[in-house]
Length: 240
Image (cartoon, rainbow, N blue to C red; front, side, top):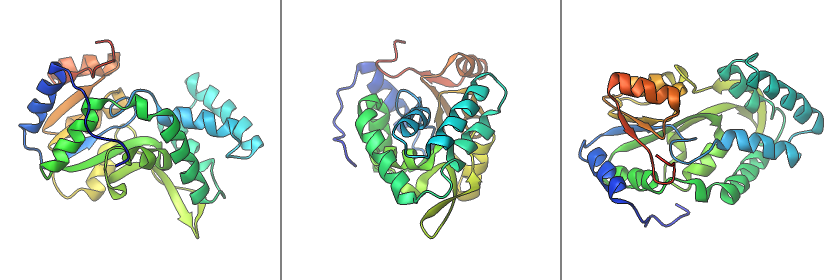
């Protein structure tokens, strides 16, 4: 783990942490963007890597136009998340991982919710199997996992097949919406005790868990959480 796990926590944060740890969960699943840290690392990396010309200029132009269509509602969430990874076809994976790590380490350590990092640490100390599930690209999520001590094999993000170290355009998975429980069921041999998410794309993952937590939820997930009486928690600094 790259960062010291000694945050200064509020009394509300301590109460939240204690309430989760008391559940003695054996398996926990976390969304990443907006849940473990503030902001969308996948979206920001997409913008950054085009400006830094990590991808060819013509690919960057085409993908910006494609993203504008997505924002206009003309391209679906799962499709856009997949294309934001397949756009790297023919690029060495080592190049992308190095770029993603440099990006995350520059822009996102200060975005990490301290109580969520502490929660992950305490769960792992209690022998809980912690998984991270995200529709963002795998390289950015793996970079983020270094700050949480979550093993790379327990990070389920949008990914493609890699041949001889070169990225292809063949998708392996896109864990968004129903794709999140699907990804978990494919590799996790036990039931999910606790799940944590912040958006409607996490609803299905939260619903599959014995103990669902809406963390820093946007308005639609907050409404769903209240309807189902799921626990809601806003980390320090989110303004709630």
